[in-house]
Length: 241
Image 1: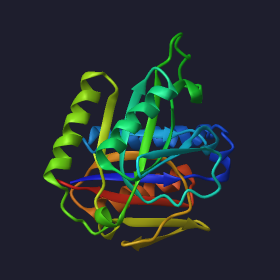
Image 2: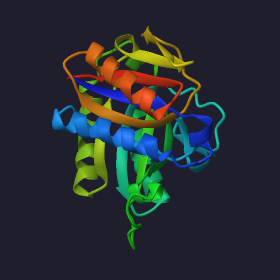
Image 3: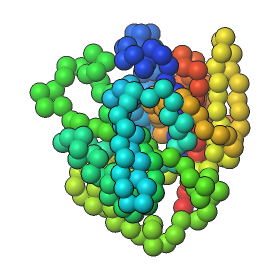
Image 4: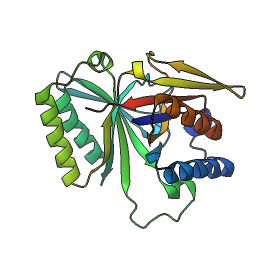
């Protein structure tokens, strides 16, 4: 089974402050352990909401709102990680996604690269990568089977993005009924099983994990949350169509 584990933004992260060396070291060790056990698939951190954009498509019209955002009310239905030449190019791919899906809301922003953390020197021509996350709607939350025609169009778009060298990763997420949230406070944690309502906390980063069960994903998420010192981590299952 595959899971997406998302940690939520803190005030320090939102200010764009670099993580403490102990946090970078702890995350590196945990990911190294997960990679050795063939659990870790991929993962990215996101830059503050001041560098993100909210894109809403309704009745064929697009509305864009630049961050920062105090509340996103994100309930993520899926994501796409894109490597592009410009922010405008990333937005144009979002337009194509909305042309297939119809009315949809996205939050898109740049990912944190190793040179942003001072781990390696910044390349002369660094890649520009954006993560787009689209919000749940009633159909996806109620696990209504996707329309075959829509799936065919989405498959064609994914193929086009892949051939263009734009798409690095993409997945839809299962209903929140199959998810969990772990909240951290005062050195303790509380696990809340789904379904759950919107979260006002922005996503700060994610990891894709191959694990045998939701319980195993929760255990990994607790360890990760303890290291990065966040208030909330969300565990979501990736459906197997």
